[in-house]
Image 1: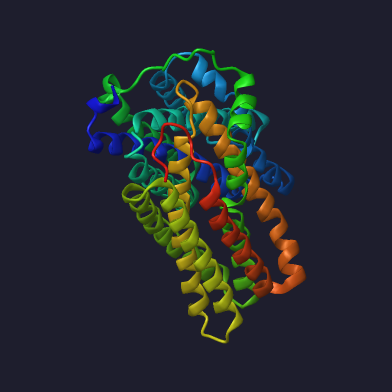
Image 2: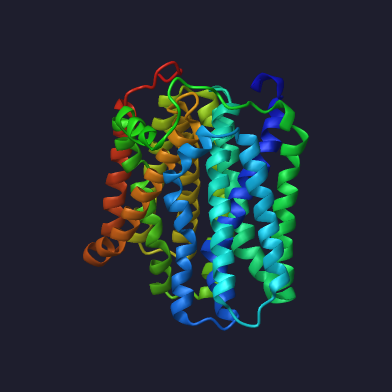
Length: 397
């Protein structure tokens, strides 16, 4: 069934869906706190808005339901259209203040968007052949980042110019536009793959047991990179950069190099075996973190460290694309949403743990010492990539 779709059609379809993933997440993570404060919300409510991200952290708990009932096309269409309607409804509210009803509506929209992520990741795993997963995940990372940029930055600018209604109306329109490809090629999408055992919550335990060593690799795959990136902004603040300067240099520059890195990582994962791609991209990631440590340790102009941060964004993007492609290889037929979401959630939690400890490390060892430790952790990921067991029935070595 998947062979009936040409690569260009797959790229257009998945690009739209992953853009639709990143747009709400970037909006809830980056834009909502600003919007709430602009509407007069208390600082307590602004801080509590981080709970809007909870569905993305907890989505693994209901991922088996996506595999068990219906097909992924139906899930995606239903959830995405409901999300479009939800944001359109928020546009009609145009509140003079933030109410409990509005907060509940935003939690609902967040839940719908997170569940759509589960179905999209499962669909991509089925839709892409092992040979296509390299460029497919490079596209995934790039489209997701682009959605986050628009959701977290461009919509804020639009809000400042046009207000609440325009902001949410455009958000709804963008998501509706991203749904068009699945209407065009929906007839060619694979249906649910039957499995001997119906997916359930026990499937999460089975997946964790089967993928134990691989989950160990995921625990360190991005930890060094994430811990290094977490202390970049505090470093530049201490170095005297203005907030506007940081927003432009780190936001725009980092996004461009991150997108470029995703494209490079996808290409590497396409032309190399999966293990060689993981070793190559995690090596590049470790080298760029190490160069950042060296750059901060020498007396140089203010733009030298910034250029090295951009380079580190590039290295991070390459490794992310290769890791995501390898994650798809670990998914069992009929359990794609369950298995992929388990890996993705585990990766997010491990990255969050490393990020949470980054401040303690930087305060104890200084920025340079912290980055040296991050380089060591990133190098450990390279070693782990060389020895992690290969999955069954997928070219790996």
